Every structure is written in C-alpha cells, then in structure tokens.
Amino acid sequence: MRITTFLLLVCVFCTFAENTHSQNARVSINKKNVQLETVLNEIEHQTDYLFIYNNQVNVNKKVSLKAKNQPVSKVLEELLADSGITYSVEGNHIVLGKQTMAAAPQQSSTIRGKVIDTNGDPVIGANIVEKGTTNGTTTDVEGNFSINAKSGSTLVITFIGYVREEVKANAGRRMEIILQEDSETLEEVVVVGYGTMKKADLTGSVATVGSEVIEDRPLTNLGAGLQGAIANLNISSSNGAPGTGSTFNIRGTTNLSGGGPLVLVDGIEMDPNLINPQDVKDVTVLKDAASASIYGARAAFGVILITTKTGFVSQKPVVSLSANYSINVPTVHANYMNSMEYTQWMNDANTTSNGSNYFDDITMEHVRNYYNDPVNNLPVFHHPDDAASKYRYCGNTDWYEALNKKSYPMQQYNISVQGGSETAKYMTSAGMFQQDGISKWTDEDYKRFNVLQHVNYKVNNWLQVGLRATLSMVKMNTGPQNKYGSNSLGATIPGDSRPLMPVYHPDGHFAGYCGDGYFTNQAAWLSQGGSAEMRNNNM
View 1 (cartoon, rainbow, N blue to C red):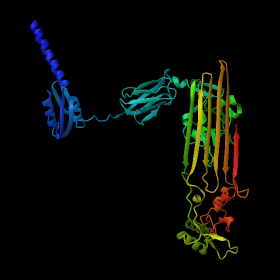
View 2 (view 1 turned 45 degrees about the horizontal axis):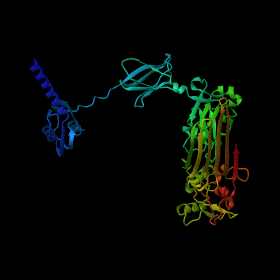
View 3 (view 1 turned 180 degrees about the vertical axis):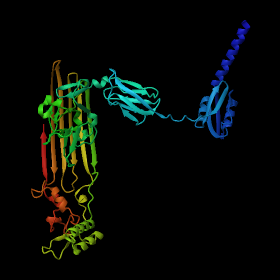
View 4 (view 1 turned 180 degrees about the horizontal axis):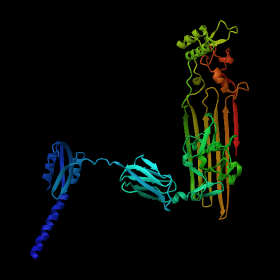
C-alpha cells in the first residue's frame, strides 16, 4: 500500500511539473518574410508543444517575427494577429483553427412597455432612446411607449426630476420601468421673488440658467447670451448698430399696446443691457401669473431676476482676468445692380408705362463707355440739353461696398477679485466693452464701463450687513440722425443711392448736392453731417 501511494504521488508531481514547464515556456525567434509553418516548427523545436491544425488553416502565408525570451502565448498573439487564425492550448498541444465569421446582426423588434414613478403613477413625456443611437421615442399620457430596437440592446430612460435609468430591451414581454426621483435636482435652490426655495417646493413656472451659459463669450449684452437658453424667453434686437440693446418678451404677445417683463438686478429694477454679462451669477425667469402676487401689475408680463456674483466664505483672494477681441463680418448683404442692369431695367419699365426709354441715347452711350472702360472714361458728363449745366452721372458704384466696411472689431476686458474670511466676503469687478460700427464715413462706436462691488459682513448669528454697488458708464457715438433735420438716412438710400452716381466728382469734391449733381451722396452726408454723442451713467 505504501509503495502504491508513493508511485501515485510521483506521477502527479511529474505531471504538474510538465504542465508548469509548458505554461512557462519561452522562445527566441528572429524570422523575416518566412512561411508561418517555419515559425511553428521553430516553436516546436524550442518547447515541448506540438501544433495541431487541418487544411483550412493557411500555414503557407508569409510572416515576420522578432522575439527574445518571450512567452509562447505572447508570441502566438503577435504572430496570429489579424490572420484569421485562432489558437487554444490543451496540455502540450496547441490547436489552430480558422476564425469564424461574426453572427449576423440581430433584427430589430418592437419593444413595448410602461414608465412609472415610485408611486405607480405614469411618467408622461419620458424619453426612451436606444443607447448609442438616435433611435428614440417618448411615453404617452398613460406612460406607455413602443420602440423598434434590437432585443438585448440597452434602453436609456430620462425625464426631468428623475434619475437616469438604463435597462435591457426585452421583446418577449411587456416591460415596466420605475424611475426614481432625483433628490439632488429637487434640492437645488432657485431664486424667486420673495427669496429662495427648493425646486421640489415650486408650483409656478420658473426657469433658471447659470453663469456657464454666458461666460467666456464675446457678447454685446446679456440678452445676446441668453438667446435660446431659456424656453419661452424671446429676445430680439432691432438692428446691428453698436450699442443696440436687446428687448425681452416672455411667452409671446402681451397686449395691443405692447409691454415687457419686469427686470430686477439684485432686487433693483435696472436695464439689463447696461450690466456686464461676466458679472452675472444666474438668471431666473418667472413666467406665469403667480409672479403678479409678489410684484403686482408690473409683473403682468413676467419677471426676470438677475443675480450678480459675490465672494466666498473662507477663501483666499482669487484674481480673474479675461480679454476678448473679435472681428464681426456681415453674414449677408444686398447685391446692388451694376449700371448697365440699372439703366436697362429703368428703360424697360418706362417703355412699358410711357412708351419710351427713361435714359436717352447720349446718357446710355456714356454709361456703356464707363462700364466697359472706367480707366479712360469719367463717371460724369455734361448733357447738351441741360441748361443748368450740372453733372449727369454715368458711373458704376456699388453703394453697399462704398458705404460699409468689410468687417469691424469688438473687444472686451474684465478683471475681478473674489475672496472672504469666516465673517466677511467680498467681490469687486471692473469691465470695459467696445464695439465699432460698420460705416466707413463716420465715427460710430459704443463703449461701456462697468464696476461692481459686493461686500458682506456677518456681525453675529442674527445680523449681517452688506453693500452692493454697481456703476455703468456708457458712451455711444452715432452718425447724423436725419437729413436737414427731418428726413432719416434710410429714406434717402433707396432713391438716391443709384449706381450711376460716383462717390466723388473728378475735381475731388463729393458727388451729389455737395457738388454739382442732383442726388444726395450718403458718403458726403455721413462724413460732413456731424455726429451725435450719447452718454448714460447709471449707479
């Protein structure tokens, strides 16, 4: 019996030693552009392994391998990578096989289910999306949904105020998905008219965005940064002139005589176009009639609450500096007719209505000559039938290019200091914004300087004192406001900016009434008509 046990232990030990040697076998091979079979034979020669494969395995393909004292497993992985050949180790044998093709893609199936909350009530409007795709749907008024997706794929279910849920799609049964309330979202604090409260306690329609929406962007004013950020908050601008402010509207038409929302900055009514967008901490919009219970009739069209940044308790001073320089380029502009197109259209129109051309043959000849050869012909001429002997025009002027720049700059600089101790916190900021105009002929620009000061001091547990001060200084230069004190500039452009009139006469004077012509020269009027300067200081 003792001899039998001894022999059994010897056999087990030998088998274990043999397997351990095979698993730890290492080889050194340096072959270049040889058949795969040659490398396999070299591995067999250096180890106790034996390769087994059938005729489906292509061992005649050319391979290259350089390995020094590397494990056999690592050598095989490198050797057979992207070859379509797999291997498996069974004792001292290595079995090679042909890699099988991946299974055909699974066909989509109709997945049906219902989304409910923890109380069993249906979640209406929840989003269901097949993960990794744009394939999605929403739940109906009973929380039911139906989506074509692959069975076994992952469905992502989301809804505001609930935790995101991911489940496996199952086409074999009707799915029931329970969404958990997102306690963190419901605990967020929202600024409302009478203070702050948690989102979970809100009953009115309120929307809030933070400073991340407007920070580090070249904005002319706060309204430009809020466009598209809050649902039902409509923001518009009447034109693109420097300093043009934004107008705000909540939920569309107000009344026949117009009206807008009440805008409060740190609790004080103020023009939002005068504040520095980089000073804003968050913006809250009270949309429904509930806001009227706090602010009265003035809030009939909604309320916009703007909160500016403050310091932080127990924080070392933090200095922030930002500089932004951008170039504005008009996206689209009118394409003016050239002189030949203009005269042809005018002749055709006059022939239709009066039976004759608008421009006579003498004028048309001068127009054609200048159009075809502007170097050797003048854009003006004296007509023999003109008793006043004033210039007639035959030029070819694109008045859009003549009056406007191709681009104009905008720059913005901001600096702020924030900090605080256990009992006090402070925030001071200063900003400068400048935007130039598009006109070539007048000094048109807008400059805004902002200073913000916040200081809060905690005297004891029941008393705090603080100071919030804002200063905005605006300086805006514009061109002439009207023509001869009555007609606006826009009224003269359609009738007087004809392509035939040049900017200058041959003697260097402006064409039009400033010289010996019949039309108003917009370039002359802008450059010589003076300018208007507007200042607005607000504290």
